[in-house]
Image (cartoon, rainbow, N blue to C red; front, top):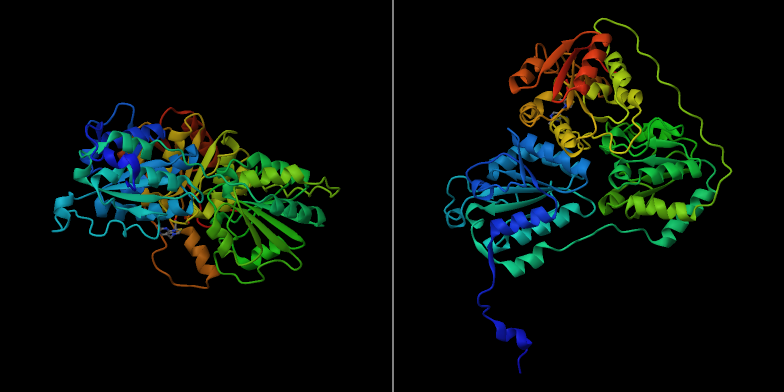
Amino acid sequence: MRPFGAAARAIPVLCAPMTTVREATYDFLREQGMTAVFGNPGSTELPFLESFPDDFRYVLGLHEGVAVGVADGYAQASGRPALVNLHTAPGVGNGMGAIFNAQSNKSPLVITAGQQARSLMTLQALLTNRDAARMPHPLVKWSYEPPRAEDVPHAIARATHLAALPPRGPVFVSIPMDDWRAEVDADAVAHQTSRRVDGRAGADAELVAGLARRLAAAVNPVLVCGPDVDASGAWDAAVELAERARLPVWAAPATGGGRIGFPEAHAHFQGVLPPAVGPVSEALAGHDLIVVAGSSVFAYYPNLPGPLLPEGAALVAITSDPDEAARAPMGDAIVADVKLTLEALLAVLEPTDREPPAPRAAVQPPEESDPMSPSAAIAALADVFPDDGVMVPESPATTFAVRDRLRLSRPGSYYFTAGGGLGFALPASIGVQMAQPDRPVVCVLGEGSAQYAIQGFWTAAAYDVPVTFLILRNEEYAILKWFGQIEQVTGAPGLDLPALEVAAVAEGYGVPSVQVGDPDALREALRDGIAADGPRLVEARVAPGMAF
Ligand SMILES: Cc1ncc(C[n+]2csc(CCOP(=O)(O)OP(=O)(O)O)c2C)c(N)n1
């Protein structure tokens, strides 16, 4: 009796075709289209980078926050996982703020880091990451150090599939430096690395029919669109739903998602929901059914209490993220792909005789002042912003004004840090531009925010990535002064930024820069910057305070 059948007789396998861990990994990455590597190398990563293949591209960030941030923008704007390569424990440590943002952005990053050679890890030789798999928790979906060198390609494949499955997010693999030259069975590794894993799941038809019935019965329903409408490709379905069911549409609070899920110049669009409990209820007052597509419910901040829902309102959220669905404090949730669910809903939705919503008020022109107000600066930007432009903002005092004055109306036009960590926009704008070379990318930065990933200017210059950076120089942390009023805090130190010369620093990194002081000069400089072949920086002097 042979319990394992004929296969048992084949052991040991003689003359199996062999390849190296390094070769197998590059084969896998090639097959996945992951031919860009974003990183900052050290000695422990060199065996991976050895004889770097011609069909791959290495994008160097001079700080790990930059490498992760560029990869985040690239992954989101390309819709595919992106590979990051960091230097053992200190490299991962430097990247943690950006990994936090990538997790909030649901950005599928496969983050790898080198590790000391296996034979030197137990005695803890220099650079040993003593608990590599634990280090990036809780910011990653999965974290792993393979038990054997031969398992590295399989682990990277597993990490990539996990990163790309909903909810998307960063994963981490630690790789001892002597693993790359180890030999592996080419046939076995090909099985592990050539698989397709697809994860788009539609909703239960009964749940969709139930939602259609609730929508038909509602007197005054409303739609709230969040970042996963854009990320899942549900943009057109959301527009059709709003038009067919005559729904007014709000954007989910800016704190809750880094992407825009509905055209903001559309006649049904009402604005961006405020990010606090009481004000959300006030904004949605009078609606009896609130349908939330592709957003958490809701990423509140600051803490302004009130009822979770307006009087008489019910809420149904559609999200592909089980955790988002489970943690919502009110309403029902359907856990499924947002695009597939909205399309299924459209297929069964009854026509309505509701009146279409009234359009929201036009935005007021800003008042003239010297120095120009931050609102005037954003209005000037709106005047010259191209129809196909992509906005990557991190100028906290002007976030509301950017949304209100630009009225972005195409998919994939807005990337913002959902996590709230500064240091996202500067590098992410570079990654977005690399993934979308045919669209002009504009990155608006407060001079304070620019500091958190300032080395990104070098990456923009070195790879000639034609992002236009607009620095709003107000010489303060304006948003924190505003928060001080909300929190009734007085006398806090460290909120002023005198004499911070961002244009000069950017020049030092190789980005040509100009300084402007009035809206006409700003419009002209922005036009020139957007038309240029390489990166350009415009620093605009603006008055302190918030812009609306
Ligand atoms: C990594 C990180 N550190 C600190 C903060 C806190 N923070 C939020 S906004 C802000 C000030 C930003 O200043 P600036 O870019 O000049 O913008 P302004 O408020 O003047 O528009 C700070 C320090 C943060 N969000 N993230």
